[in-house]
Image (cartoon, rainbow, N blue to C red; front, side):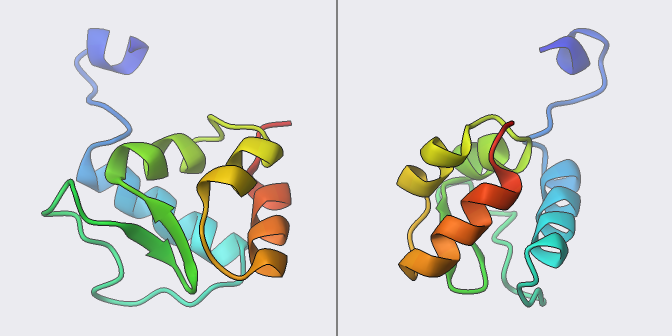
Length: 93
């Protein structure tokens, strides 16, 4: 909200979210590639490798450390071991 008030745009804007997606995917050790980020369709599901982060809004919250590790684990779909490891890496501390 502060960014928007200053006219700097939302972290949910494609430019910021795509950059955050690439950084978090790298930190998580997941492959990134063209076509993995559906920036033109706000209803598409965002993924990192086999992990499904959800909608653009939910992915933004996860990638900006908006949730605890427990909340991230509950929101992200994928192989349980990978979900748990990902949640520990990107969950709010």
